Image 1 (cartoon, rainbow, N blue to C red):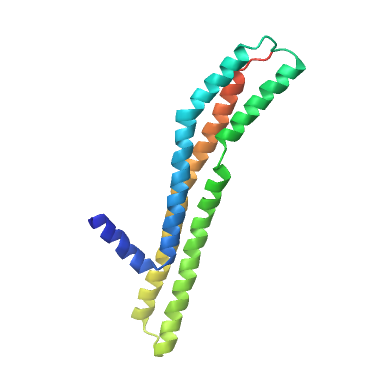
Image 2 (image 1 turned 120 degrees about the vertical axis):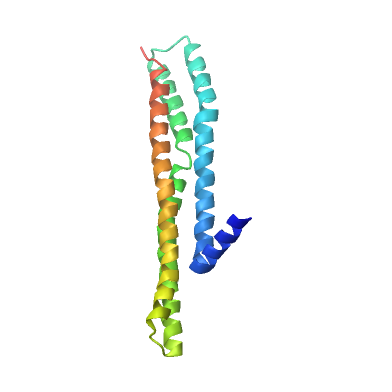
Length: 170
């Protein structure tokens, strides 16, 4: 329960943009977890099925057989790379939302200072602190996804080539 209060206090300091960063972060991690589940849970079953269908074929050497093999590998590659562009897009959105939060925060700081006619360094420092929180949150959110998305891409690439290697063509 204390964690929830800490998160809400953090969001209160950073402004409404943090809600958007949180939503994007939630979606990004949902898709990342789903991809790991597919690659390590579902894809091995599909790969075994493709290999079994290939090995049960009488014709593995003709041009037509090679086209079927290539099509099956291509379909598997597409399935492995599904949603990767969406994950990368969500990663790219995080720092941009952080920048939006910083700009809107700075606008409100300057608006407040001009309305009060005060140029207090203390007031300005507090406002700048509040305005930079979204930038930090956006960068942390993006960095958390970059590592795992690159690992997912590398794993999908390796799994595709392993499948192709297990479908020998003579």
